[in-house]
Image (cartoon, rainbow, N blue to C red; front, side, top):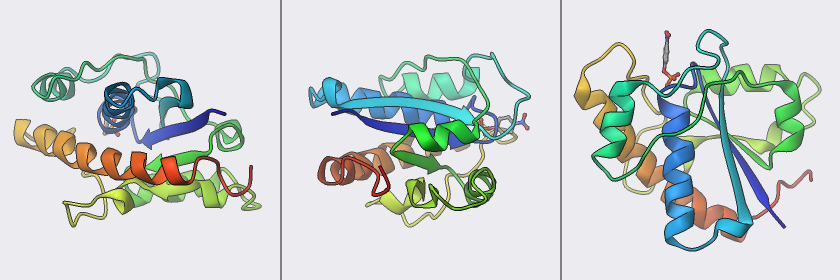
Length: 162
Ligand code: 4NP
């Protein structure tokens, strides 16, 4: 059985590709590769086809993590396909729920920071218009959230509605 995790932000070039690649890094470290499938997407389409932001990739590389992948826009079909859909901020969360007006999959959509154990943050801040420290902070926050999420999904491997 494969647990499918989708990470979602606005542009899919900063926060969500970082979350996806950090999660894959942790999954490999724990030799759990067979059990999980990770992807990421953006609520907006303007960066579709783009590689991760260079500033974000530098901050991830400083922690030994390569950012790979190309941006795509999230679809309503994703909600049916993935067990967990992790929103980086509350606006992403609202935009995801709007893809599912009946609420059939709303229990699959979660805020990423709900899985943090070291940080009090409730949202992953958008680093796009800020300086390098914002990108470093996103990586640190996502390492925390991904560790918490991995422990959670090991205990709860499929969406309640699957
Ligand atoms: P992301 O960051 O949602 O973490 O990928 C952003 C990327 C691009 C823009 C905003 C946020 N933008 O306005 O183009």
